Image (cartoon, rainbow, N blue to C red; front, side):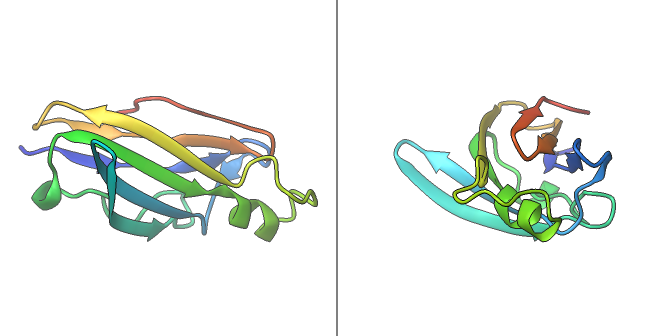
Length: 118
């Protein structure tokens, strides 16, 4: 089986999936960045399909950008301007051409964490 990439977002402040959060995926090479996908999370805080499916998968360095500010404003979790967290970029590498990579985001208005999931 070929590799692929999935992601999801959990709103740790509200204790629920983060629905309606926009995510962009870019492939990085040296100093260049090419946006290759964009998605919005569903009611379960996940994208409906892998953000990087099997047919498009390549090993390399990538960046997911989570548009947290729009989500936090829409859910009434922040009044600050500028926001403490607005766009949350996560850069990571995928070296195994046959692996399922999963990069979740645990989000609150003033902090976030991530890890390599399964």
